[in-house]
Image (cartoon, rainbow over all chains, first blue to last red; front, side, top):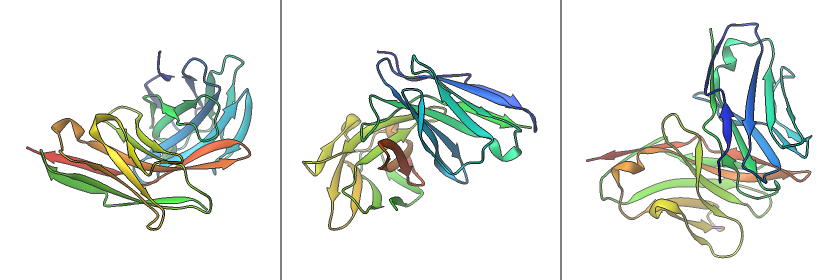
Length: 113
Length: 115
């Protein structure tokens, strides 16, 4: 069974641009969550989607948004990029949310110049 | 609010020695707890999970963890360290809001194995 796939693996952007990251969950998994990992703040929850609906959102500005498609694939978008948005963005999927274990992809490393 | 504290941002042990990584949690409800490992340039890999039932949980790669409610702890151990165990380890507690799970992570512990 294929794992969680995130594309691209690396991205370099400049301040003010926007970016879209993609996540394909494990087949059959309907819950997709996104996390931001930085050396200073550690791992922080961004949002969670289930059946195309955002059910939970972390404490991030509105520049961070996401969506989920009918095939459970998810995208997250960051607009008006800031230097502080440089991070590893991790996507995780689980079968139905709740307390099921989340399975992570290898992440997208975003660097802002 | 649920939270996790990992004692020791860096732990160094000799190959073959006991590995002990400490995790304490705060939760107002019975917790669901997880340990994840992260190798360089990779995502997080699930090592083990505690949901309910047996308090001693066995995971992959010879790791195990014991849930101690009285101590609000969920420490990760491995009897004999291997060079391949060098990585960063994260303890996490599951928080459920309106049916949606989010993981609250500790700050991580970087494990170094000395030959």
